[in-house]
Amino acid sequence: MTTSPTVRALYVHVPYCHTICGYCDFYSEVLDTRAAPRLVRALTAELRAQRSRCRLEPLTIFVGGGTPTTLAPDLLARLLAVLAEPPLGAELEFTVEANPATVSPQVADALASAGVNRVSIGAQSFDPAELRVLERIHRPEQVAQTVRHARAAGIDNINLDLIFAVPGQSLDSWRRSLDAALELEPDHLSCYGLTFEPGTPLHEQMKGGRIRPADPELEADMYEATVATLAAAGLRQYEISNFARPGRECRHNLVYWHNEPYLGIGPSASGFVGGVRYKNVPDTAEYVRCLDEGRSPRAQQETLSPEQRARESVMLELRLVEGIDRRRFAQRFGHDPAELFGDQVRRHAELGLLEIGPATLRLTRRGMLVADSVITDFL
Ligand code: SF4
Image (tube, helix red, strand yellow):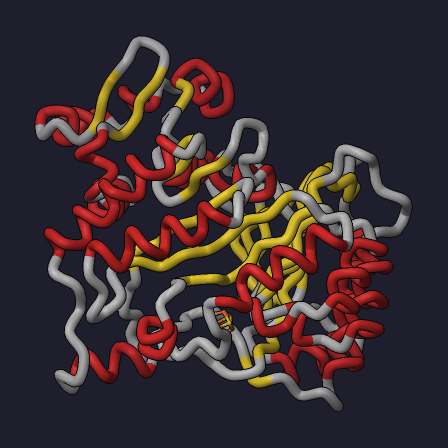
């Protein structure tokens, strides 16, 4: 007899946004208010089908996108009510992504009444010109307003997303955005360097010479300033791009970085359940059709070999400041990571990018600056 795998994390993808930002590489589309109820029905159907195949006992739920708060408050409340059944434990971390221009007091109340206790706000910058380069629809002052609405509704765990290395941004301007974010006393900050993903309008602008990416040295200075400023403000860095007050680390993302199982539902959502990694079809209309017709919305799935899982774990856990716990890794995969990936580990250690400790394997400060190239070497 096979037992159903237990899954502790649930991700739900709501693909709608009011407009599409020029740098966006997520699967997102402009809100279609007439189609939105059908999407919510399909999400409900997929969740119920998945619940019958695995034991879903979530310690974290993350509703992302897209911008889930573009949904009308009653529709959003309907979706959240389905996610929150059966009644969830008091320890649950329940996050919804929100954009500053989309959270009215009514939306904040709908979130709080459904049990949402963490809001992740896409602030990105506090400089109006930089927000225009990023094609964001909000104004800087709407970030503070969103934080106020969330706290007034009783949601006290707040993350702000920020982007640095925006074309035209100076180190001073980036410091001003960091300071403005800190004035709002967030519990968590995610700070990512802007990337120019092929296929995005921003990438086209770069190819056409209309905008220039930030100088790599300036980007490195911005990153160093981020780490120093946030440490001084009591936000501990626990991942390459993530900083939190003690106890406010994002438990949902920690599930990803520790390569643990999670269920993903919605168009383009991926998941990892029972050793199988899968991805749903990145097309909302097709996703809804699949669920309406009782078909699986999965576009790809692959059962990972033990070696693939070990390799993925190294790549994900190296992102964490604490690095890889060698003993835990060996218990899980049967080998010490420093031996299993001896060549790569030695090479990066000799370059001063990786530190081999008796209990851990982790990136050095210098390694963090070039993390992507170190990590992809383990592919
Ligand atoms: S709001 Fe977020 S998901 Fe939507 S288009 Fe902009 S970056 Fe993409």
